[in-house]
Length: 175
Image (cartoon, rainbow, N blue to C red; front, side):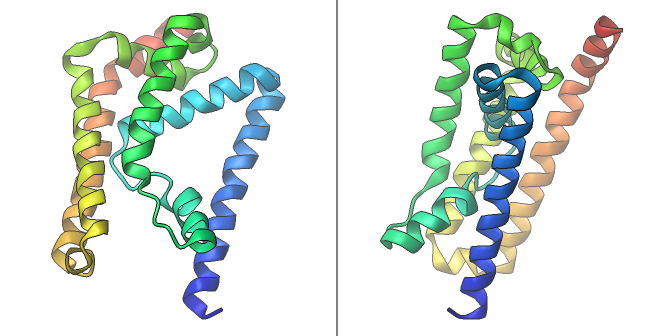
């Protein structure tokens, strides 16, 4: 194994350690069932609100290493996260009140204007990441690396600006 492969393997293991550590923390805090569901909601908020190559190091690299098949996580995780949130919204709406970030996610889902634009910006950024990762010449270009960084910055900034009011409302309601 060369240096790049060993670095990628260590990075993938580190991400799996973070994922399992956070899941264990939620299970200890809320119990196994509720903790697992809340962890899934936090994961969904990350997927739906932050533009990026979601899960490429967590799932894409190990599957590519084992099978040689390239898993396109951007196309898989966005509909999966949206379906998960909608299912829990319909079946267990009180679960969203357990944590601060899930309360924010609940408000983002239920108030279309202007919050659904966060999901649109994130989806466009994720599709751009998918296109760049599929095109070797675009992936190696500094211009596309710069555009990806700017898209990520704009997506996170846009999310923070639009949800700032909701943060204040929820902080005042909880005190």
